[in-house]
Length: 193
Image (tube, rainbow, N blue to C red; front, side, top):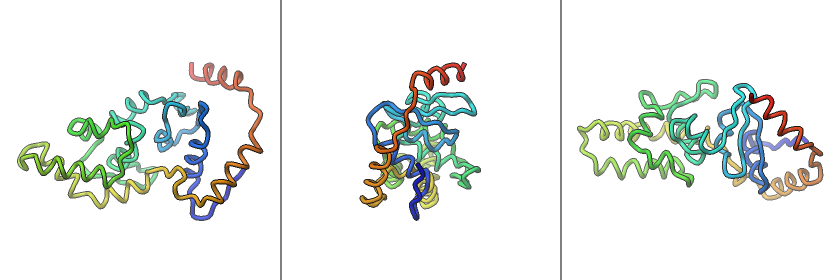
């Protein structure tokens, strides 16, 4: 099944489809952005690295960032392949060191919500401390962080018009592939060894 939706990126359609079903799902992709979709029912299998990413594996791979906070982490760190330079002089390791509770949040924070939290902490921190300087650097780069976040965040359906969302759901229900899940599981297990 092929979906062509004007002004909607393929990543966002895949994010929408991944969230349609409540059954356990394995998404096969080497694209790091899809790790944002990992939850209790979704894992990512990267055929290039032969890694399976569940929630704990995403946190390990992305320096403590949970799937819900991964768009923030990717915006900060950047990705040359996606043309995102990131915030110069700031790494996800440093962010996790100073803001571990935000990085490991189980609920999604937008860039604005994240920056509001950073500002609240900055207001309570002496400016001449290492942590204060770090928080100031994030705030000084707030506009870039917002732009990079908008690029990295997968939109899982909120921006799809309801008639398109219904069309996708109906098509997927009608054209559901007949897969042999036992074969696929054994393939993954064999391939990952």
